[in-house]
Length: 336
Image 1 (cartoon, rainbow, N blue to C red):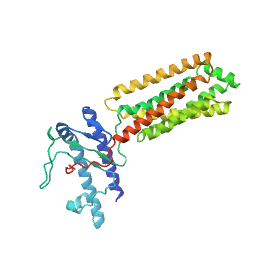
Image 2: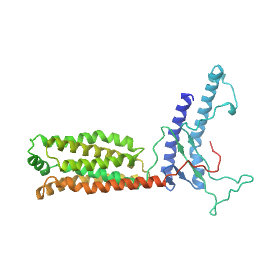
Image 3: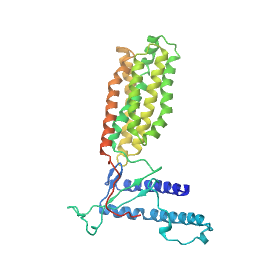
Image 4: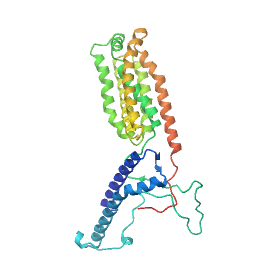
């Protein structure tokens, strides 16, 4: 397969993915799933009209590239003025493994000799977008935010518990120098900031597979911080929790970005909850440190972190069970 044809198909796939996302934004009533969207007959007609200009340009670019490749194969001059007019049967078909976009209509007439009954409620059209290669990430349901958002909020809480009396009590209990408190803050925040882009990039495709180990690492880091006998284990535990929190922050951000109509309320909700978690962590750290010990705020976060692990695992299982087991094969012929 010629690299130019592969690159053209990848670019077309990206453009069709962006166009289809724009269409879904303009039609929030469309029932969206991870691997496709079910459209009514009116919405199907609107999509055909909406995508016609881009499909026409893509067809012209594919035809032009096919002419150039055929001319090069025959040794002719591939310049526009000397292209040979060949039939479409001369052009090599796209390979199945190639990145591609297919749109199929679910409204067809019965084939001769076969049964193709019409549903009782009338025909229902569907447009199925199959994106390969470097296309945009699929849209996510809002409930997938539960596990990553809870993990991210616990990460914000663990960042704030060392503010105020908590840090001073930690220093005195472990007999650390005054410089140890800023270092415990840096040991948490710096890994978190470095891990956030990683969570954003990987969580775009695999949010559950990225958040689940991050939540487990958050538990390990909290336990290690709680049981720390000295500065070395304390800083290591803080660094572990910082890495896990940063990954969860990145996954939560990308999941919010992948929402459509829910983005209007999900983004302020997550930001507001993060601000509350920051304030609650500082207050809870001060009160629990004065009443009990500096280890208590870290220990109390562990049960909630277990809940975050369970929530992430459950939402991931639900997504896997709702995902189609194989490629969709409607009975219609491709429109393009």
